Image (tube, rainbow, N blue to C red; front, side, top):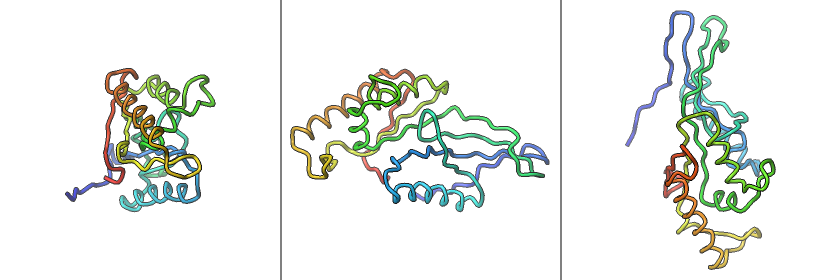
Length: 188
């Protein structure tokens, strides 16, 4: 299953090149702890080292966790002279985060839940290809209370039902133009 991946550089002319960049939102993975912040920077570093240059950046994205751009770069100065957005945006949630987002209220879009506010931003972002990536398996997830103990059977059932309902809503077009992609294993 080894796939050879090379840096995405397109020679435009002798004076410029286009470089495909992955942009990651600085809030990805929640940024709750120093370990999480370090992990996001480690991902950025690994990508940039792998391709021997800057191909990944962490910044503030308005509507999702990941986007791609093509930057036209001057060979003489190294400056970006033009940037074009790819028609693809990705919002990623693991099942634990999704369960929380479904019940937590949005600070900026009251009275919506955090999840509804994110979907509203995705639907109205102006990009045609919108992917909602759900990682994990709610049926085998180790559900916990806010205090860290195991969730009750009733609470586990409610969380699983909320996530399954949300998957169905996205699959059946409740959030116009948002495509659902699911993985059962977070690390694959």
